[in-house]
Image (cartoon, rainbow, N blue to C red):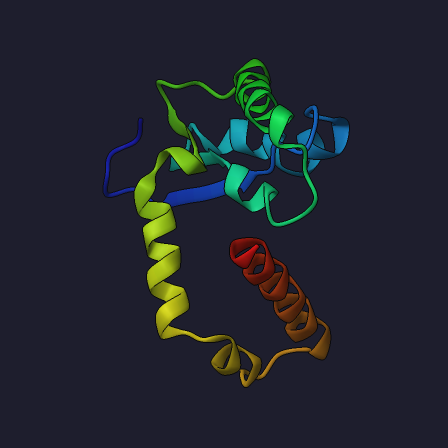
Length: 133
């Protein structure tokens, strides 16, 4: 892995199915190249996957399959870090902390497009309703 003083790349991919041409050409192909130039961390974002309809019975296997596909596509564990989002407790803890100090009302008042605000509101309502049920 490059020295710690090098620039860092962080990116993730949802385990929503098999790695396909769009994933490969849009991201993974670049990740394979970037891992030799930067300190890279790549994540299978299984927690992001549960913000939309999903099958709880298949999420674990889809997550595993995506990680295997990333290695098969050329990511080298000696050159980059590949991890599963839900396996890092600090990720969830940081999300909780950020949501307590940046409430939805504050996010909605930011200067951004109306569509983006509606999307954030829609996703937040789905998360809130899934927690309370």
